[in-house]
Amino acid sequence: MSAGGTSVDRDPGLGGVHAALAGLTTRGRSFLAAGVAAALCSFVLGQADLLRVGLLLIALPLVCVAVVYRTRYRVAGSRRLDPGRVPAGSEARVQLRIDNVSRLPTGVLMLQDRVPYVLGPRPRFVLDRVETGGRREVSYRVRSDLRGRYPLGPLQLRLTDPFGMCELTRAFSGYDTLTVVPRAEPLPPVRLSGEAAGYGDGRHRSLALAGEDDVIPRGYRHGDDLRRVHWRSTARYGELMVRREEQPQRARCTVLLDTRRVAHQGAGPDSPFEWAVSGAASAAVHLLERGYSVRLLTDTGSSVPGHDGAGGHASAHDSADAAGLVLDTLSVMRHSDGAGFSRAHDVLRGGSEGLLVAFLGELDEEQAMLVARMRQRSGVAVAFVLDGAAWARGGAWTRPRHLDERLRLLRDAGWAALPVAPGMPLPELWRQADQYRAQHGGVTAPGAADGGWA
Image (cartoon, rainbow, N blue to C red; front, side, top):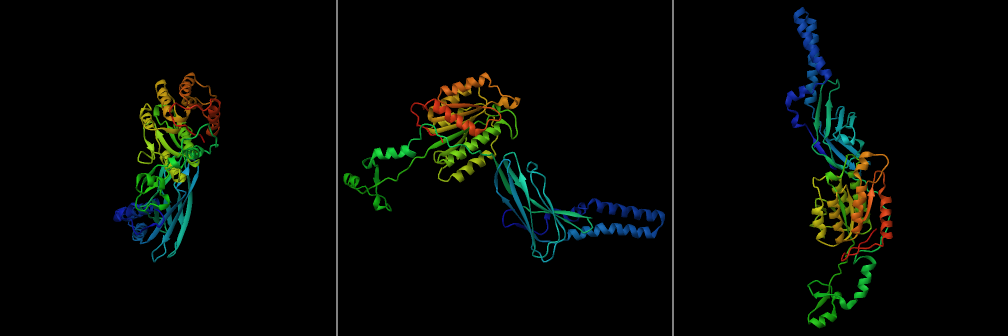
């Protein structure tokens, strides 16, 4: 139920009198059984007074069933979720509102909202008599350490009689969705050598070197501003020419996330895969805030915002919306059944990338060599390689020999490759990547656009 609410009269799914009788509580069933037993005993013992007692015990729960079943309360319910997107481990507040839109006051109502078990216990509230035109507001909080999308609802009302003999449940039809996104850690604003071509100071320098004589004109179109007329080209071509609109290039970045099931061990909020997802979210949000156009790419070759966007990169002009798109995608990111990076390599081979940030699981030699070749189309390439076995072992970390070999393959190809073990904070690794690039001179691959680091 979103803002505006949903009104309900009587739930048609109750199924008539049989469903109403099924709503008898333990107390109601006990009264009914005692009444039947008393009536039978009255015939056996020949006691007329006992028969009257039995009939009274039988009649009371049946009358309560009839009263509850014929109740015609008309109420409207609404739910407000604040906020609708929360990081893992944070709380969201859910406010429920019930309005009595009928001409009669209600009796005692039990309000219950259905929530997944990972968000906490199912909230229940007892509402006293709601006067005509009155309203009641209650709220509860939900929290999840696991990212995902969780439905809230439908909202249910339980109607009961004053004696507690019968209880019927009537439900609204609407529900809301709580999106729990991976936690994005704030990263330090470090900078390595180089900047994407056509961006920042480099772009201003290129314009200054080009000069006005190098402006590429086009033919005049109806509606063009006359102040953009390029008179020198007009005289040269003999027709009215105007300056083209400037298309400033933005610094671009691809965040590569390794989702292969074989590359990550364990599950849960403290697993290496969740660390990688959180790292990808942190890097994407940080770079969007720094003015980059960011694309999220997985080993399966799927990218966000997708190939239908401008170059497949989320626009940096509205970093909040772009970050929300990336975080929503990461909230439902799951393991893939693939075994390699060939599809991601094909996507990266299609164009020149300014900055490549990769969060990788365990690599064999073949996949390490394939990832190393991805560096050829990038300016600055940074890889965080997780040691999944260290998460499984726990305790003190000893870097295995095969991990050093994989790191050497990546570094020989120009990657700033860093190992990741349990307990290592991403902000500190971010700084170490900056130091590594500074120590190695920020050399870029031949023929690739120089990349930036922020």
